[in-house]
Every structure is written in C-alpha cells, then in structure tokens.
Length: 633
Image (cartoon, rainbow, N blue to C red; front, side, top):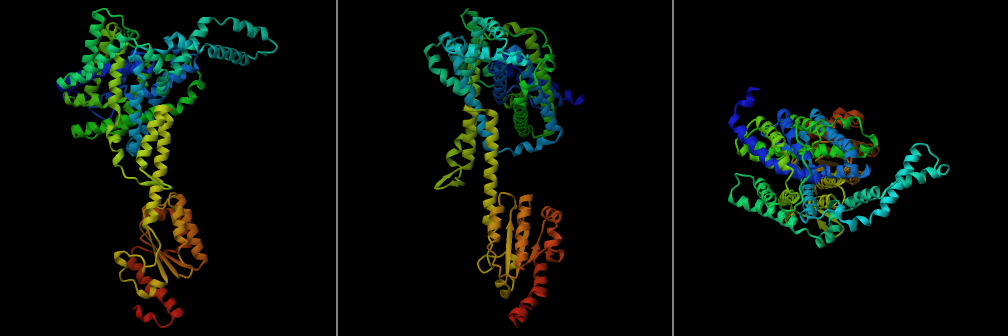
C-alpha cells in the first residue's frame, strides 16, 4: 500500500489529466453503443479504478475504447432486436454478456494466456482496427447530419406491414408456448390480435427501421434520405467540434482538444438557447447495481452471444496488453500480462453490474497519464474517482451536451483509430503467395479480408475468418519452406553439410542422406511423402539428419512412420543423426524407436554415424561389389 503513495503528486496530476481526457470519450462511446452516455461514464469509472487496483501495468488507464464499443454495439443491437426493441427488457441479458466477458478475461489471466496474446497476427489486428475506424466514422455521419432513422416518419411507415407480421407471429408463438390449440381457439387469437394498437405497430416499425439503418451497410442505405433532410444546426455543431479538435492540437497538446471542443461548442449551443438535440439524461447520484441481470433473463437470449463474450474478452486482452507494451516502452518497466488480464476482467465485471460498457487499456489516456507524471496504480484509481465526482456533481449539466458534439468527437476517433501504418505498407509488402498465374501478398489479403468482413458483415466472425486464413497461409508457407530446404538428392547432386565433406566416394552411390530442416507437421507431410518417394529402392541405406528438425507433430509422426515402413519393406536400412528431444519423445511414444529404428542406428552426430557406416555397412557392400572396401579405410 505504501508504494501507492511514493509518487502522489505525479499520480494526482496524471490521474486528473487522464480522467479529463476520458470524459468526452466515455460519454460519446456510451451514446454510440445505444445504452446512453451514463453507460459509457459508468464503464470509465469502474474499469479505470478496479483495473488499476488489481492490474499488472502500473500506469495503465482503462475504460471504454473504440474497438470494445464497436463489438458492444453488435451485442446490444442483437439482444434489443430479440426483445421487441425494448432496451429496458433487453438490458439484463446485455449486461450479463458483458459480465461474462469480464469473467472470461479473469479466466484467461488465471490460465496464463496473457503471454500468448502477442502471437495474434498483425494483419488481423490491423484489418480489425481499420474496420473499427470505418464503422465509427460511417455510423456517426447520420447523427452529425441530425438524421435519426426511427424519427423519419416516411421511412418508418415502410416497415409497418412487417411490424404487424412480426407482432402476429409473436402472438402465435406465445399461444404455442401456452399450449393453446390455435385452430380450436381461433377466437382467442383474434382477440389478442385486436388488442394490438397502432402504437404497438409503430414501436415495432421504429425498431425495424433502426435495425435496417444500423452498421456500415445500413448507414449507407439511408444516407440519401439523410442528405435530403439535413438538420443544419446539428451539422454545424458537429463540424465545429471536429474543427476545434484538430485546430486546438496545433496550438497546444497540454489541454485535451476533445474536452475543449466539448466545453466550447456545448456552452455556445446552451448559452444562446439554440434548438439542438441534447444527449440522454444522465441519472444523478451514485450508480446503482443492476442485479436483475442475474435473475431476469432468459438463457436462450444470451446463448448465441457466448462466443461474442469471448471475443470481447480476447479483444479487451489484446487492446490492454498492446497498451501495456506502450507503457513499458515509455517507463522502461515490465508489465505482468496475466495479472493485467485479471485486473481488466474484474474491472469489466464490476462495470457490468453497475450498467457500464466494457472497456480495456486505453493507449491515449495511458500516454497522457505518463506524460503528466503518473507512475503508480494510484493514477488510474484517481482517474476513476474524478469521473465519479464529475458524475455526482456535474451530471445534470452534462445532460445538456448536444448529441451532435459527441458525434463530432466520435468522427475524429474513427479517423484516428485506423491503422495507417498497415495501410501505407500495402504496396510494399512482398507477394509471397500464388494462385494460378496470380501473385499476391498473403498479409495484405488477410488484412483486407478482415477489414471488409468486419465493416460489412460481422466483427466477431471476421476476426475468426482472419485467424483461420492466417493460420492456413502460415502452414502453407512453412510446408513449402520445409520441402524447399529438405530435397532428397544424392550427394553428387546436393551440396552436403560441412561435416559430410569426408564421406567416402564409394558410398555415395549406395547411401542417401536426407536433410530435414524445419518442423515436420501436418502442413508439410504431403511434400515430405513425395520427397521420400524419390529414394530409389535400389539404395541400401538412408541417413536421416534431424539436427535441424525442431518439432514433430502427430501428422508428421505417422507420415514418418509410413515412410519408414515402406523403406523397411524395401530392405533399406535407416539411420537417424542428431535427433532432438521433442521429435525423439514423439517417436518413442509410437515405438518408431526402437522397433523401426533401433538405438544402435541412432547417432548423436554425423562423425559417429560415419564410423558405424565404415565398420558395418561397408563390409556388406564389399561382399556385393567385391574388393573395393580397401578404398574406404
């Protein structure tokens, strides 16, 4: 505990500065998620405090981030749609998914998964981050124009027939669940249908309209309607916010430009009594736990989102640990990845209980904290406490912030979160893959696939597809590399290794040396089988050099066993040289050693093998060839 106060002044300034930077972003992320500004603020408060207290990166500032909010939007929209567009009804299931994501993060930390996060391919991360930027940018154009699909009467009217169909379908489903035979009690169905009012139909139609206009594709579909009904005041407020954010950075970076834009534009709009659209009201007082999430939900409502919860957990882990690396580079320290995941999981779990958005380590806020003097966990805790005080004292004032201002802030976030480094590298990456006559860069393909699928389809599935493609291309690349480096040739055609220069000329016609370079795994087994088939069955002996074969998986193991059985049937002796620990362990498990290759045919180095060949194999060859053994000794 004493360590928390070793840098109190620096941590105080760092925490206050980071909290101020986090305020407008937290409100904006809350609004864009669909849960409202209070959800973003609650998430920033609890995640910042608890992730700092229990995490493994001293200077980390955590809270809702663009990637986490983008995935959360998918969860929220999906569950709300399943609950007839009623957010209040859907909220317990939504928060439970967020809570599960936090528990999964804790589990990842306890299982020691933190150190493996770095193995996720960069093209997948790059494509995902750029897609997040595209999603935020495109979806915030509509509120920047002052256009809200569910408030467009003509647009909503087009969904009324479908709304009536859905309502009637729900009535029939309810009756089926209640055991009512619809054909025998058709009058009851009619009575229930007659109870449906125009208000019910309109509410369902608005939900359908909102769903239709959600995401990148939905926003682009309704963009022509939005451009025909621009609210010029809302657009001016959004553009003013964007201009101040970019312009103020040129004056100074000591004061967060997003906060300056928030205060200035909101003050002008409120002070002059402009007829703008404010954000949703932020509840006053201390946040209240939403325990309904544990009692009022249907398991079937969240089952489809278990994988999404895991995605949230993994995304939060990646986001946080990447920020931890940035913090390490700035402070010359070393974070504890698994402890950090536990801290982030606790923060997200507590935030979910209080109705907050999930989050992760935030790079910009962490950098601001360090530059302002933050060095210990106290800085992150202070940032959370500051946001809580702002909520308690300034909640009513914050409720007057124009919605267009937060849309403008999010537009700049969308532009900033894109991975320009990865995009700029596209023309220069080597074309290392080929399909027919076409050559292409495998990394560019992965990045573009994730980018496009994330933007127009599904963030969760896009990452999975990207990982699968990256894994397949990696395996193909490794298989090609292993085959390329491990060609089977006689020593007269292949340049031998340095210790093979004294190999007797007489034996080069009878003995083949097989160099295995690289892992023998399921991606290279087919090539290995083809190479093994090149060994003439007239050879008497094959020496397999394994000193550079570091890894052997089960597929490679059984392929090797098949090759050895074929060679044994052809009465060809096999010698192993330099077998490493892991491959030997695998071969002993299935009795390749010693049944197919006895211990007497396994040598530590080539010199030992050569001595054995001269003392044993050469005698047999002399009997066959006659008289030439004297050349060897």
